[in-house]
Length: 117
Image (cartoon, rainbow, N blue to C red; front, side):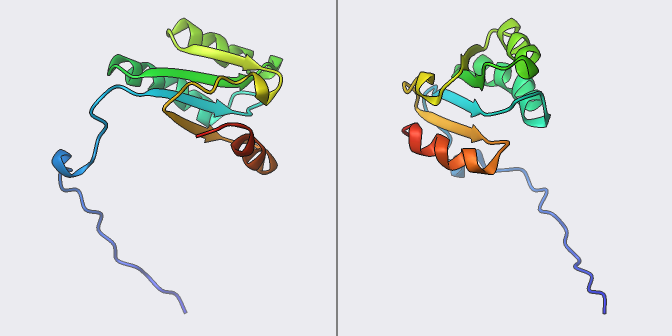
């Protein structure tokens, strides 16, 4: 038996009054354990300059590995502060929000336990 779900997405404009957007710029840290460049890192390269242009302070923490050197350099060229770390203890803790992308499932918990926020 095959079931079909008829779903039409709600394409109504979003009411910004109900969205609870931040009222002041935020200090955001994006942390990844990426050993190389993938979709998440490419997304950061494109989106972080836009967040920065809206007044947010954005930074990225990536492991200091040859495989992700190109994305670290591209982010820096776009004016994004990049922390290249060898150990999690090197990642700064002075941010309003932490956004985590873990390539390796076991690292997600380790990073969350090491970093506050």
